[in-house]
Length: 532
Ligand code: FAD
Ligand code: DLZ
Ligand code: SF4
Image 1 (cartoon, rainbow, N blue to C red):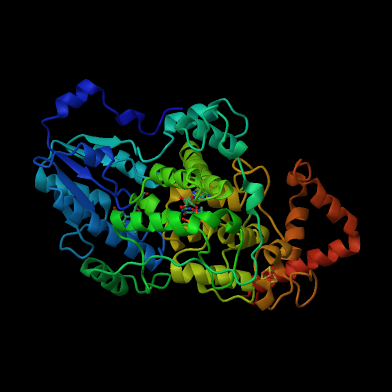
Image 2 (cartoon, helix red, strand yellow; image 1 turned 60 degrees about the vertical axis):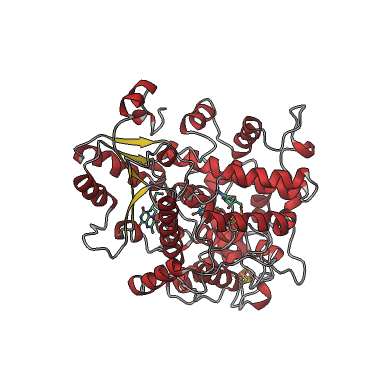
């Protein structure tokens, strides 16, 4: 399978021919990385760098206000850094006169005004923009080069070579290859550091009493960031989320400080606390780095190397370093590979025929389920909730209740500061909703209230009881869980990893099963009526 970039690469001799040409270099909001070819090869005398804040990108989903503020502030700071380095930057702010409010429009306007010989852009992270740029090629009077995004550690061609001869595309095997290829956490004899590839079994600890998040760095807001906050407050008043307090890093230097703080103070307990959920503690020992890596302020390999060094120096245990590195070198690269290999059809998948509309409480946070309330409050206030809350609370509920995948996908794409389709879509469609029919995960991540009760302290403050499955106080996750398994027995009954759950269901007997089915219907009715 060809790489989406293959058609746009040039041979070295073609590149020589272009050396004297003036290039309009387009940098998108999530491409703020000076090591990318688009900046690295720029000629500061001849070339112009174009960056644009446009409504088309700021409104294709109802983005969280913190996400927009973070990205605009990071874009404006990055433009300043480029100017200080001697580049000419054409920066179009959202309210500038003449802003056409689309990336295509801004590229066309810049070509008209500057008359470059060529236009270059790094391949975008989302399929829709990639298609856009292909169409724009036909409309432009000069050639448009789409350069590969070399921040990723696995190219499209490498991922496809790995995937082509496999029946099942399991992340774990992809990850081992990435460890070997990039020599991360490997011993000289070719064995994995610590003697095992994966220390996940050590990382499933429930929260201990009084668990709190380590202190985090926050940054003083300069006039650029304050200007952006004012803009977002005025222009995105109806968007989702809470704008302040706003303490994101908005420059590479600040993001590096946040990375160093994480490695020094937070990483050592990352593994032990990875799956735990605690009331009022959105972060625990998670890194909060996804927004920065995805926007280009940090490079994935530098993050992995720092975590590896912490392990080698005896500062972080292997279960923490390996668990953390697996998320970046493994999951992050793997989901990106899945996205580009299976788009555009991947976004349409609905293998479990889920058709319920997204309940309004995903936006309002108003539900009697304390676990959902907590995850939704973190999301609303911080544009963040950690992986287990995304997967096992909000994702799990949507899976069990049969919410339509597209609606769930649009929600996840809107509400997190780190959300871009290439990473969000496979996590939602594949990991959380099993809507890809098991391409990404061999079994659905479905769980009852028992799991949430074990891994969090949420249930203590809930209107429902995780130990009750039928009746007024029955935890909705319980009956919905059994109803989900029952509904999809044909698909999952033969799954080698699920025989024990069906054995438990069968042992319940017809009367209890009927009561659970009725209870599940009551929960769904309450959900539709906004009473759950
Ligand atoms: P940590 O827990 O500290 O993990 C370290 C890093 O590993 C992250 O910064 C991230 O770069 C990477 N990572 C971890 N898990 C994954 C994963 N499953 N896929 C890809 N990268 C991963 N991640 C996004 O970056 N953007 C999204 O839009 C997004 N949407 C998600 C939607 C759902 C339904 C689920 C279940 C997961 C989603 N994730 C997404 C993956 C993961 O939840 C976030 O990367 C993580 O919570 C970000 O917080 P952190 O930086 O503190 O991560
Ligand atoms: C997410 C986003 C937002 C909110 N605004 C802009 C913008 O105004 N200009 C821009 O260049 N990029 C923005 N982005 C990021 C793009 O949506 C992102 O590049 C694509 O989704 C591809 O990943
Ligand atoms: Fe969530 Fe059920 Fe626990 Fe309530 S009882 S917090 S709904 S798992």
